[in-house]
Length: 67
Length: 481
Image (cartoon, rainbow over all chains, first blue to last red):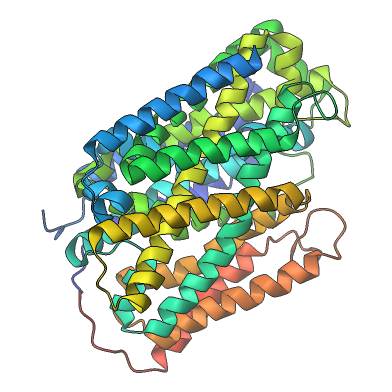
């Protein structure tokens, strides 16, 4: 079974999971860009994840796909 | 007006579904997988639509009304972060093996990988058992939603009308056009509920003086709603919520959509756009639900989103909400029904009844027959099902997440054995049953031993451990990749 996927995107996934746990700012009650800080953080995280995934499909695309 | 908007929408769905039949090639592979021809745009929209249900609109706003904006993190961003990686790893790999070996279902993959019929049958039984309550939620949810949107219990349309409408429309386009019509209609339905989110958000927020003014009021008047640190959730609970979206990787209907992709390249757009589209779906729903707290005091007699829209906008927006709810329900129901039809046709009728050979046109007719049978059975069950079925639906997601270690190992771990895979499925099923029975006595939301840990956080590691242990103590069969 050849290894088709590179390993580093797994690290990106783990970093995303770690950043998901923003308990260090849970008590923050300011508004950022008109939104509660924690909501703005998670919205930003989704946007950043999309950017990181763009890098994954650009530089981490699986090999041996038979196309 | 609500019914007019809904009727126009359903006619549009039917038209597109019937149009999809024009390209039908009359083969089993075309019926169940659109001849593996789905391109990037339709693929991303159908993957999102299949994964979003009425819960995303009505349930999430209701949860947010109760628990505040933390619901966006618990259910929205957790899905946005995890699912694209599942598509990247499992989706592309499953597509490649499906292309190479002609798989149509997960059970075919498992049978071919491990050379075990009984393991295939075990997986088939567990998946079908988990799918049934999930189907019922959609059909019953459509009936409930239409009743509420047309005036509520006693005044609005009875629940069976909405349930029947959803089943009838879904039957026509799934039966007639198979996966191609399902995917095209899903792309339309996903667009509809994304657009509805924007329209509802702008219309309601403008009544509160804009987003910033609404959030400022929420922070001042209901601080617990605008913050994560209200003490109602622990970091442990937050961590366990991150595991729930793993269920997506084991859904048979998602698997079918993966296999329907035209090429591996088709996945690129889905992987990159998925987090943005999930955020765009959940953000309006969650923020509107939280803002609903400014206008309505609990307890509410109906979904907060419906009440907000009826109180702050016109009937056209209410009609759009009805269309959005139906879109969310049908975009999941159609794929689930088609995947079940594929499983019964390929994994049971073709495999056991015809020893792997079944004429193409007969595969299509068996598929249509199963689609009709499942929709009819689901509709009849929805007439007698109680509200507790919705809780069982949430449990189904936990069950699917428990199947993920086995499916991931099937795709990626050469040392995995049939015994390890069976141990993984059985341990997930046993734990799931134990936790579920335990939850029947619990008052309020259930967690493992009252620790705040969701059952999924125990079931997934246990299933992974059983897989590894079971595989390492048994000899692997020769693997054909």
